Length: 557
Image (cartoon, rainbow, N blue to C red; front, side):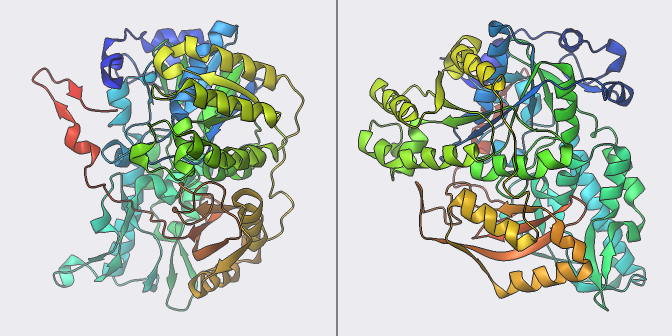
């Protein structure tokens, strides 16, 4: 079988105006970025607001291996299969981050014969959205430091500056830095740091804002620092919100691309799910629901992270609800959760599979708590044995869970027909979506509900730093206690310890810090050793990427 990039290069994509026409989008609503990608014009987005919504399908997964389990691939393949079962479908995805592209996990355009095109563009600079978000973030930082340099009229306490710079690359050396060195003309010396763009509050705001007015309101509400008397300093106090919005104007328009088979895809925004809320933009999802009978979207990493945040943060914010949840499971991830090292997960090991199946049980039970039909997608890898696949299928039957074998990676649309049929059947079933935190009255209650109901924790511990941070947040306004909670946690375990695989029991979640993302509208609870600026592995993917004399890129995956 050809590599992902070879498959992508051999494809004959439609001109993007043809993809748009299939959705009823007129050409004058397109802002072209070459022949195969376009942004959608603001006037058209507003025209769609009164159209009825189609059905929404959320794709999530069990706890992954470090290599990823094909959640995006399954999402794309399911979208490609929908026309084969008589459904008009559209896909809504996140944009890839350059961190994983050049790190360990690779890109986020799908894989095999279930990819979104143009794969190279999407995984690199695409339409420049990531750069615009980075620029808006760093403009705010530059204006803040300039305010310090120009006499500090806002009386900002340099020891209590909360907002960090960002870049869309894994670079652990920038986690903690000193800025302003070199004398008076070079700024005020202080501690600073970088986080990866996809973990920034600007990215969260970008993905949760409904329109330009809402975007500017949220940008203005970013808590950037405290002053010397302990009062809050917001981004609007620095008077650069308009400039930030100007940098984001074009990026704020959703991007239209296509799969290998021409299925349309809105790809917009890209927060990580382990350190952010892990969902594509509300704008793109809402628009997708107006354009097709079925919208298929994904949330990052396992259901304990991306899906929980999609269901408890994005859905209430956007006023949407899924009609079906697809839970991706793989043989190799279940063996990994059964204690097999990542370099051995492709080897047959029935005993490890039987031990690790409890991870599927946990994720399945968690998703069923939301009152929506759940379908397990068994994503087949070439090394999987029939015996291993049959074992998972039998387990699903024992649990009374709907399931289907997915072979979209190797077979494309045809490999997703079985899954598509199960999903179409599921979206037609009655369901009553409910958020598990809907009845919670405080930040701590919401945190403990997530920890106990989704992670399976016994209790939640708070470090003294986290307790102080929470007190500081509540001191700003008692209404802060009503904000949703976005938990930053390892993706490899249901607990906050990546070594606790399977379905851990009798453990505590330790919250080491709580940060207010006031513009985004939630608080971030940092657990375990999770970092908002990842590092590169010993042998990063960047070492295998190159450009030939013709200008063709190779090595992306």
